[in-house]
Amino acid sequence: MKKEARVIKLISEKRIKKRVKELAEEISRDYKGKNPVLIGVLKGSFVFFADLIRNLKIPVTCDFISIASYGKETKTSGKIKLEKDLRESLSGKDVLIIEDIVDTGLSLSYLLKYLTKKRPKSLAICALLDKPARRKLKIKIDYIGFKVPNKFVVGYGIDYNEKFRSLPYIGYVKD
Image (cartoon, rainbow, N blue to C red; front, side, top):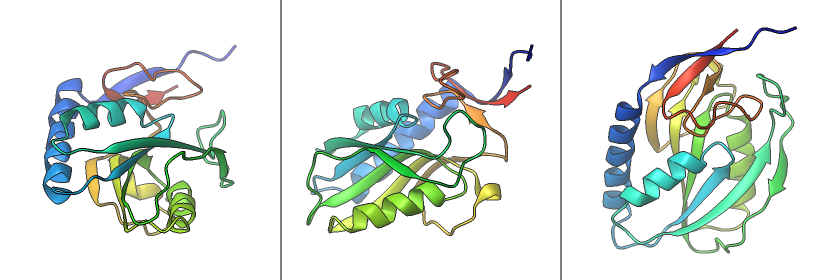
């Protein structure tokens, strides 16, 4: 029988709340006078997405997309598939992707190519977490919450096999 994984805390709830508020201030300033479409990448970004939009001082339109590359593993399969598409038209609009974590860059690269075909006016990325040690593709992240070490992180909406999403902090799984 496999022993239960435990989670070691990396980023406290208090630090997350403070940084989300700072990101919202930056985004509100940069998009002042615009009405961007925020696209939450499901499922991992939903907690971050909700907290971020509650702190924004600008009008936004919200939509969600779901792509998959992990399944029930801790390493990406490298094969990305679209699971849920957008409802909003992006043509001529300012678009901001809200992502939980950028690690290899494979999923985000796929998403950027897919969304670019929808002809947005602008396309930017806001990621709660950046894990540069695992990067395989160069990705420009416009807004970064925290850089994290090369560990399998969970909490604050991010899961491992559908567990640990409800943790109010970011931690990493230790067997």
